[in-house]
Structures are given as C-alpha cells and as structure tokens.
Amino acid sequence: EAVAPVMYKKDQIIVREGAVISEREIEVLSTLGMLAGGVNVRMYLGAFLCIVTGAAACMLYAMFFNKRLLYDGKAVLLSGLVMLLQLAVTALFINIDIKLIPMMFVPLVLSICLDSVTAAILSLISTSLSAYIMASSGIQPIDALSFLLVGMISGPVAAISANKFQNRTGIMLAGVIAGLTAGLVSTIMGLQAGVDSMTMLKNATIYIASGLTSAIMCIGSTPIWESVFQV
Figure 1 (cartoon, rainbow, N blue to C red):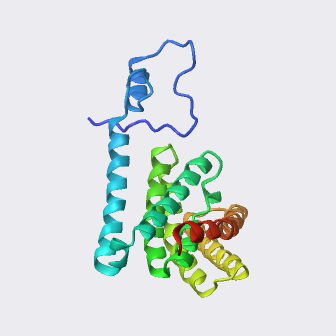
Figure 2 (spheres, rainbow, N blue to C red):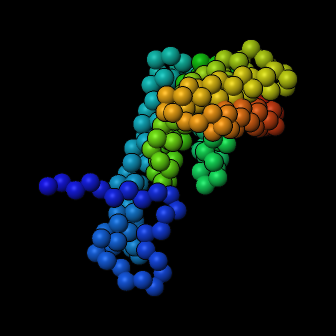
Figure 3 (cartoon, rainbow, N blue to C red):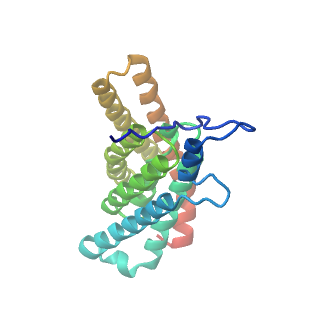
C-alpha cells in the first residue's frame, strides 16, 4: 500500500545536532541534497529545464511577434539583465516575504526602454521563473502559485500603464495601478480561500507597497539602462 510522502515546511527542523539519525531522516536529507557529497539532481535539473523553457519562450516570441529582438543585441542584453536582476531580488526576499518582491520592475523598465507588448510577455516569463525559484526554495506551493497568478495579471497591467506615462510621476502612478491590481487579485483569491479580512487587507497593502517599490527601482535604474544600451 502506498504511503503518502512526509512534507517539511521551510526552516522546519529535520534532525537536531548530536542526535542519532534514523534511516528515514537519512533518506530525507539525501533527497534534499543536504548530506556531505549529496546533490539534489532533480532540483538542479528542474532549474535548468525552467531556464531553457524561459529562453525558448523568449525566442519563440521574438521569432513570431517581434523579429527586431533577434537582430537587436542591445535589447536582448537589456532584457536579460533586467530579468536576472529581478530573479536576484526574488532570491533575496524569499526568506523575508515573497509579497514584498518588486514583481512589476521588469514590465515597468522594459515598457519604457522597449515596448509594452515585449515588456508584458517577458514579465510573464520572469514571474514564472521567480515562482519556480520559490517552489524550489521551500516556499509552500500554494504561496508560489498565488505569487504566479498575481504577477501574471499585474505585470501586463504595469507594462501597459508605464507605456502611457513616460515621466517620473507617471511611472509612480503606473506602479500604484499595478500594485492595486495585485492587491485586488490577492483579495479575490483570499475570499475564495476563506482568508480573514485583516490578513487580506495586510496582503493587499504589501502588494501596493511592492508596486511603489518597483516604480522607485524603475525610476532609479532607467537612466542607467538608457545610457548604457542607448535605448
């Protein structure tokens, strides 16, 4: 008869230092790649496949909808660097609160430097990669899925809004609009899941703050992108 696998939460203690380790605990540590010389091949393989899938999605978009990207090395490099910065920030905030991650940074910057459609598409890819990083880092799958759904809706909203406002005040407004959208999506999911009102209000407020943070990062970094890449 099949036995359901044991789930461990982030930061949950598996075995204490100095304690006698059972075969079950050795199996868990080995699966997580935490034994000396142990490597979690499946996790790294999954990360590699996720990156390849993201790159392939970018390539397909460029081939069929925006061929300019295939011949514009600066635009490709700019897009890659902005997305890598987003993923680095994601890794930094994973141990704090994933709702604080400035998920609108990619669509805001790329909408201003390139165009809103490219920004929206690459935002979806960036959000998917961020969600995978979360799931691989011990974040509960439901939380990673929630982040993914919020980002897939608020990202395109940020891209479209930023394309209409090219000044600093407009970018801040675009960040607020995207943040409000993220907060609304979060609240709708919270109502469906039976989350209490105070928690939903707190989550919505954090998402609005995330939108503002994304806008501030965009305003601060855009002159650098424009100067270096001549866009």
